[in-house]
Image (cartoon, rainbow, N blue to C red; front, side, top):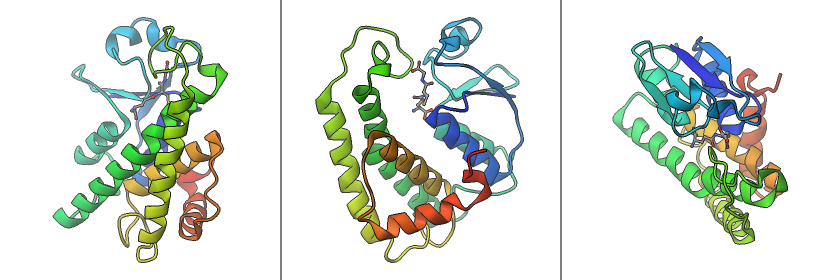
Length: 211
Ligand SMILES: N[C@@H](CCC(=O)N[C@@H](CS)C(=O)NCC(=O)O)C(=O)O
């Protein structure tokens, strides 16, 4: 089994934090997606989505998408610590928050970043090289969506120590990576004291520290 990563990429960072928190050790290869390694063989054929991260199993199966990779590693007992919950209720709440954070924050902000900065000219959609134009309205919609999410989440955190309850979970990793994207796009979250408090607590965990 081998994991293909590019350490500076946000989606790779997300999986990397998961690996450290869950205590998974796995053979990893770096693909420089800025230089277009993902379009060269054998990677081009291995992953038609042309993105990192992706996981190649020993039977040749390829799993892309950060959460699918993390879930596979957890459910195949590669790690020592469970981050997707252990009871039906916890699993549902973690899934709910993870999806909310992705749909309202991580994905719109990622799209916003790719539409805001000139360095994404010609690669506005992840894993593509084409002439699609960057769009200011996608930047604004991403920021608006994340602002609404952060307002809701801050209220929710009045009664929760972590995103999905008392225990640390994969949803906290998604939140932290979403906050890093907010920072990259220039969206300030300083008015949300509960989010800032959780962000500080997460940043103090070893897995979240940038080496
Ligand atoms: N939803 C995917 C996103 C993957 C993704 O966007 N990867 C980016 C790096 S953050 C990438 O590989 N981009 C390569 C490119 O745009 O050519 C996931 O979470 O795995």
